[in-house]
Length: 215
Image (tube, rainbow, N blue to C red; front, top):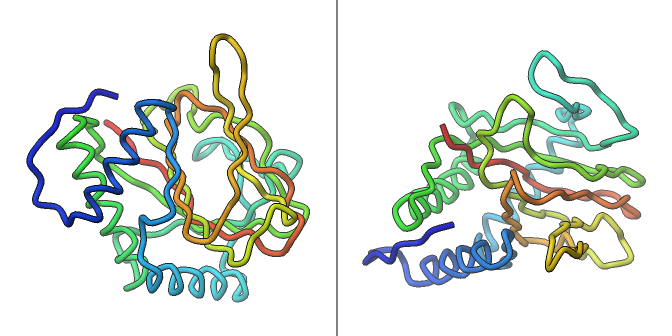
């Protein structure tokens, strides 16, 4: 990732958070931050995803793309609902607007060329997981950055559901465990880092997952 410094009129807190994310991406191809969203919005998102799940609005996730989708619970076991960015509700709109602000910053300072975004709510019930994979398709390389926001409260290492990111250093593989802590945002390069979700030992693991896409 190439970065060009520009004079920004962005709020100082956001500027520092965005710069920290960019620095981590440059050094490690992934970034972790716990202060991307304010607590009020996180509380509303937590309530919203729980309401969707309790109302049975989420559906079993599939693997594959469009007409080649298949539900395979031996590979992934989450339930999802896509966020319609054409008709979001007020809470979803606040989330998407913050992501849009971050995209604009990336495009101005790093020339990322991100033109599209897509996000869905994801719930992993107890015992569910997602095996190791890469967030790209053979015939579609548009996904540039993968983004995950965790919304489960009071989560500990005993609850499982860690995000495992696999990196390479000096021809040696490193498995990086990331606890799905409430309000934590993880961003990583979709075409580079394989990852997986370890089995969940506590009900429920809640998140918003999505991708920032180039042309």
